[in-house]
Length: 169
Image (tube, rainbow, N blue to C red; front, side):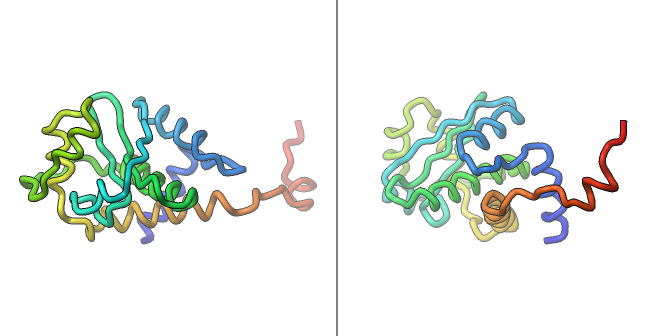
């Protein structure tokens, strides 16, 4: 966790968490930082379950020049944002392609749902099976930290800091 804590602090300086919290602002900041557009795709949760998407609540699909985050449309707003931030965590933490295994699930529904994404890309994503890995725990912790940071009141400068540490130009 110590390494992730340091990485989180670095990332939150590079891609600041907006106060007050605003998911579109954060999403745009991550997209700008990565130089790739990010599209959100709410889908029926049953489409995601049983397809190798971990708990069946979210999925990051990296296309050649952009990213898609699919998430369950029937969840609460807070949970949807947590799912999305979890997937953003994968992006910011550098969790790229892993060695893929042939998908064991029938993914025709996903290819129909996402016709602009190559079947090979979908097969790669759905071929992942290690959802209890360090990467998953790190992305989940990242999402927790972002959401906690976003809900914290913004710090105000103390009187001590204003008095003794201000810029005296």
